[in-house]
Length: 193
View (cartoon, rainbow, N blue to C red):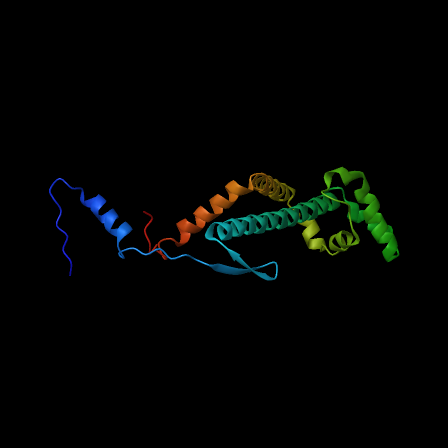
């Protein structure tokens, strides 16, 4: 056991720093981090690893937001199609058709004047979805509720677009949310000094 006695005028904090700096109380260890990058082993320093992981996180968040935007645009397109199909009574035009191709063409023709309201062109899958709507749903269609859902989807799309426009700020918010959610269950075991 070693006891260090200091003169009253000496600063104990500076003495502790000197002990760490000039003795074996503190040891610095050089890190040699070898990672697989691009299918090959690469030696990187901590800064490079953090930078690479940050770029990867931004790329993953960007792809996640783009996927969410596509999903919301598809949902907007579907809800708009159903609204047009029911409110403009396009389903009545198919009553006079005798063949499957004539039914499809009647739906395409009925939606053609409203193309500017749709997020994308009408596909055969869209027509099949419209033709699969049960009569019960057509008769109980709630236009106001559908419009409210469309407004909510547009707000979600706008929020996703905003996050895509400022991806770094979005990443910081996501990481802070993770810290808020999980920091109490996983406390930090080191100190920043």
